[in-house]
Image 1 (tube, rainbow, N blue to C red):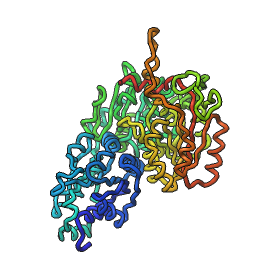
Image 2: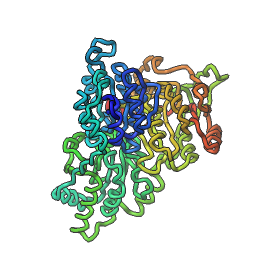
Image 3: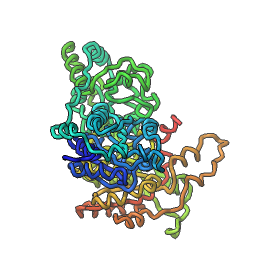
Image 4: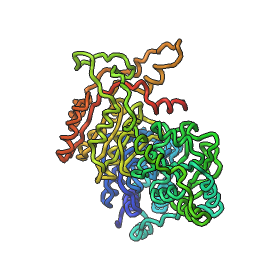
Length: 580
């Protein structure tokens, strides 16, 4: 490394600190640092857009547990990544954005902008490599903020500093640099543990709802629930955490099945473990009964009660807190009654708790989003036959291997893959929805696939979101990913159709929906143009193509242009728009 520049020092330092993967679009300002990362052994994926790079890194970090990197050009390269960075920051994803920065003689360049201000505007932290002398310390500080504080960090790399020789002291220190030890998570104090145990001991119908902060704490929470006679549920982002448990209710909130919503709303104690208990997870509070008590376990004091009033807040990590509360219960009680864990409840959960168990009402097999008769598209000779999205999702769940990783874009369709497609554990579901942006799905699926190459990657997306991010389909093809892309296609921005186009008011006059409806796009042909396989799906028989693709040991994506029937507005959509 003798004679190395600051850019080279930064790349090698991040590799030694344990950065997992880098995604980006390379330009003049980030060429050197990206090559330094690659030279040091950090895998790099070239994307077609910086927004895709940021979202891939976000998904990779979530699914791998490592700090992922994004490499962007100064100015416009950074702004192109804005939505992906905002999503990661809102989700507290450990991620570092390596952003070249116009500085010194380049301050008046076309690429000059307030990059620290930009970072803060999308809730990311702004750091900078200030000089050759401070460079290594600056990098370690940024890495620790990302990893230990679960922050998304924009690390600005001024062009003039990047080009300077690294200091001899920094290069000597680099030779022995290793990942710093992670700080121990806070442990709940004895008083809080006792108080939570007391709440549990007096509850008749307790329910534990685990969120993203409880990922990895599944065994401990299961043990506590078993002793407490509690049912288990998760927020959407933690789907799969309790998979296989006979008292697992699945997702709490807008995606809940009728039985899940019923049993949670009848709870007299709800314990949020690493879960914000926000309006999505608690259906704007309607899943919390009038007399139910609410406890919350979180790593940070500021999170306790931030979304709704609580009766008890416990600062601590979910796993150690669950273990401590279990020990306390055992100490002062010889054994709790089964309470909510009765044979009758277990039988109902087995028979009714999944949407795939709920009988299907006849769907409206009409046209795009509105439920009206379908206008034949340019490729149709008459009214189009469309597949019920519930049937589509249910049949795919039966077809796909158990070891899968499901990613979901945003839109009216999103409950179908979220509710109908099972996952083996919490590492099988990637849900980039904190910013509620459509168009992140394809990049999410690619990042998740690279993090978990042992599982079949599956994406559920709408036609609007798929077309918004379609450039990254070339990335998936280039990488040879066996990615199944399920496009729930209603030729519209379906959420807006159902929000603005329907009403219970008898005097309602539907507005012009021409801004959110579109002519038929042959998505299957579009996919083939990118080098993927593409199939149009109008009925269950068309899914034979999925069977054949799975049997072929695929090395390229398969895109299903699923022409879905109108659902008249999805059940989860009604929940979502209560907050708008």
